[in-house]
Image 1 (tube, rainbow, N blue to C red):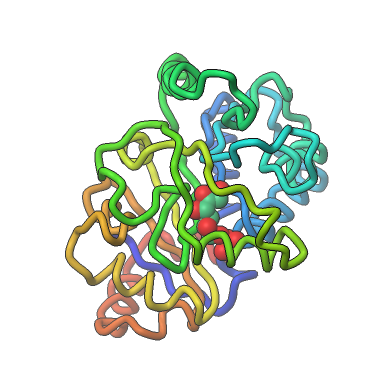
Image 2: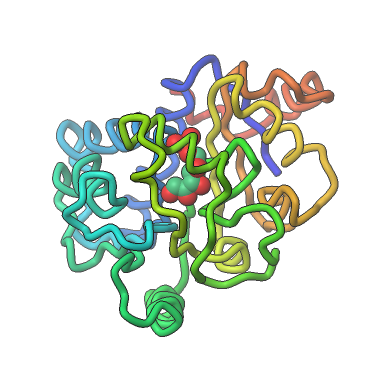
Length: 263
Ligand code: F6R
């Protein structure tokens, strides 16, 4: 696991955008796995800027989002499809037909989940998976006790997750936050070629410490990334504040080619 402790979230967004930018220029039909929520917003702004000012071409890029709330239509302002259109897709030259978000309105979720997995496989698998982390250590919406080998499935959300999301995206109204979501599984995430997790702020420090330094456990689903062949973690100082071996991570980074992304 590469651990990059950034000055601030702007620097993290810049570096991750740089990594995605290089990938797309090298392979124009890059397959991106994307996340929603507060964490990737600056990343998407940076990608939009690169498209607008530096000719970053999304015309052949394909995307697969991590998750969607069960029961929210794509037109619902709190749905993840709405979020993605609003925060990224509407502002770059991506073909919407190449963008995928799980169907929160599916009549048969098992079939929808299987079709989602088959779609990712047909696209050749995910090259770069962008992830945030929940304060309970979830990735995607894989809550504690989800199988670390899980595939796309319907997941019941923990109260803490619903409270976090009520605050950020539902005007504080818990009753409006769906109780379930359809999410890529942890096994799905582990198959991506590169996984990039970003986390910012004190509220993520405990989850980050458990992910990086804790034992692999379904109680902290993000610890599964310890098994990923190429996981990179971009965090700010606050999110890094509970890491015990922080000096070591800084020393490793001092020699890392990832430093080039700071430019
Ligand atoms: C979103 C997702 C979630 C979020 C996590 C952190 O698609 O899969 O795992 O990444 O809940 O959310 P924020 O970024 O809002 O703190």
